Amino acid sequence: MENVQASHYLSVQSELGEGPLWHPVEKRLYWVDIEVGKIFRYSPATETQESFTVGTSVGALGFRSNGGLVLATGKGFAFWDSFNQSLKILADPIAGKQDIRLNDGKVGPSGHFWAGSLDLKGEGAFYRLDPDCNCYTMLKHITISNGLAWSPDNTRLYYTDSGDHTIYTFDFDFLKRTIQNQQVFIQLPTDNSEGVPDGLTIDVEGFIWSARWDGAKVVRHNPAGETVLEVNLPVSQVTACTFGGENLDELFITTATKGLTAEQRARQPYAGDLFVYKTNTKGLETPFFAG
Image (cartoon, rainbow, N blue to C red; front, side):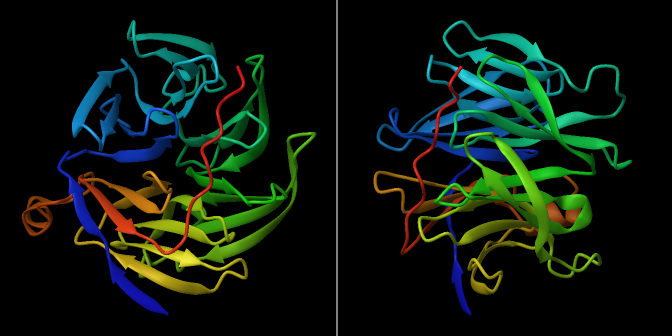
């Protein structure tokens, strides 16, 4: 197994930086600060950073074919118009539920938006939002719905429940947009000695890159689940990663300050910032929501 170091990329000091995503047309990196309810975007070409306040928590975003963003928020699924800075709620599967919000999510290869909820009582769920804005429950009894990605051939879905310390794999039916045959892909110790699996992405070779909350690293697994590479960071709360850059060979990594004591913050001055690692592989191009 190889050990490498990520480089500090951008100072943002996010409380809970998450959901990084590379826009293939704009050539900009997007991400969120979940509980603060902000969307960020950054242009490497112009070194310009912008932020937008949504008005509710925002766990994940996706790009729309019709322009703007689709979001997973504390008020359900929504569209965000960056130009008018307006939020339009589409479907709220968490309405009336206390202490629960939508967390990580992504647009899948068929143009549908998948995201799940966070409920420490284990009453969360994993949803699919269709282009017609109908919402369907795909899994129940989820604790912390987190990182997800599809295999390059679109036959597998990798999905994280951080509350279980587990990354699962499913058979994915592209035409029906359904998942079945749930199996454990990676299960980490519950004592957090290896960190907690958080956001993830996949490369063109079908290898999984999993961020480790409280683990100070991103871990690359081959399709058999074996660890082949660890990308180390100087901060403990590593939240998510995505491929981007002109050649899709740069791994952008979000981090957080949430949960750190004052003493830990002092020892981790780059906590909450963005990091990057130049890989020897490439990511898949970001799909757009078809609605």
